[in-house]
Amino acid sequence: MRELKSIDPSEITDNPFRLIGKDWMLITAGDLNKYNTMTASWGALGVLWNKNTSTIYVRPTRYTYEFLEKIDYYTLSFFSEEYRPALNFCGANSGKTLNKAKETGLTPVQGEYGIFFRQSRLVLECKKIFYTDLAPGNFLDKTADATYYPKKDYHRIYIGEILSCLVKE
Image 1 (tube, rainbow, N blue to C red):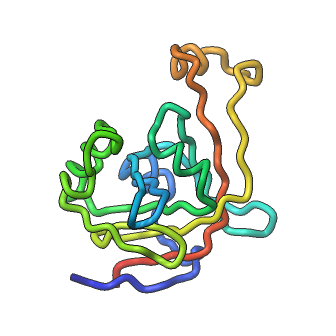
Image 2 (image 1 turned 60 degrees about the horizontal axis):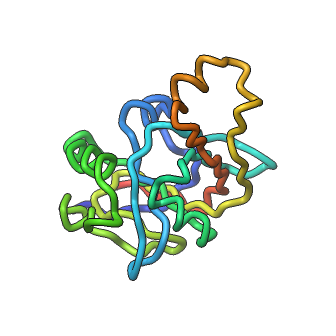
């Protein structure tokens, strides 16, 4: 298995729209004793306050939300297409009731700032620097509220500074 090497986030060559929206990612928070991971296809990579950042969106109903609220760090793990079944599983099942890593064969690794998975081809270790909640009164496109939030379970938006970027050699 190829090892991960550290690079500057500005060296990421993936198209972020494909990387997040089509390939998907696992958002993970916690430590090896207790963590959760969830599949996400909404997010962003960019620059804020002269820092390389990631933006993630997590509903309060998700188990990972509990970890994000307690811990300052999270990771984003990206995989090759062969891991699509694992991403599907992690998006459709709750870590409250089963061990997602065991069920999918993913191997959790303690990084410098958080948990990621050995099979990842790209990992971003992030420290939360800002959060806010989507507010129903702020939707300019009212169809988005009706389409994506029929249960009124609005996402919390977390922005994290990318502290470490690891890629498969």
